[in-house]
Length: 248
Ligand code: MF3
Ligand code: CO
Image 1: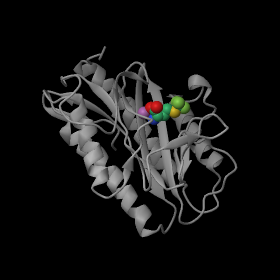
Image 2: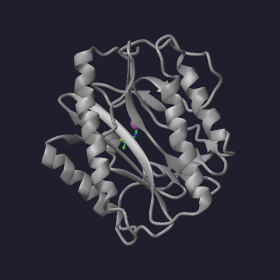
Image 3: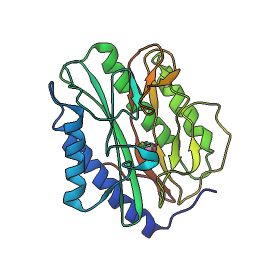
Image 4: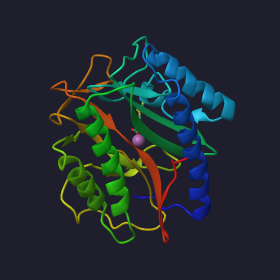
């Protein structure tokens, strides 16, 4: 069941999502060669303490950190640790908080100094595909119109959409209905209504879409070792259009 939110509830979700965006922006300022991914997790933790918000992922199904950090061929759910970033890496930061009973969730993929042209293009294509899905989100559209818009935007560049993970409804729970695949034909699934709140999160690969999970039980990597990227926004559909809640 897709839970519709009132304007007041969307306003609360906007506060949670803004905090996510602020903390992600703080973490980004620490991205440089030599930084350990666990130091970035500490920055996110400190950001939560300062604002008295709860990190959404820590303890979720046993996930051990606040931030998910996925480097290069890692797609999502990488666990922060002693790994040091290097120039030329691409780093996905996925973060969520709970504030006043509501969740916000967002992700960005950022370069460490200079990255190669293919990596640059992958970041561009993935972010564009997120906005293509957001553009497709209007009252009366069908859910899979978003999925189709994402897939089309990514494949236009010759890249692939990861199929094993999906976006999701969000609100008083981190994951609500519906699941939002990033691929598929348009015109299917529920009709979109004002009050729907989604975390839209395209995950892409420069090679093929197959992933495997590392022995840590969390980190998803591309099977062919190709680069992967991830962008995510928490958004709300209203009668006046889409609000991107997790944008500064
Ligand atoms: N953005 C991801 C999601 O919504 C992050 C969840 S990671 C987990 O599914 F650790 F919480 F599982
Ligand atoms: Co999410």
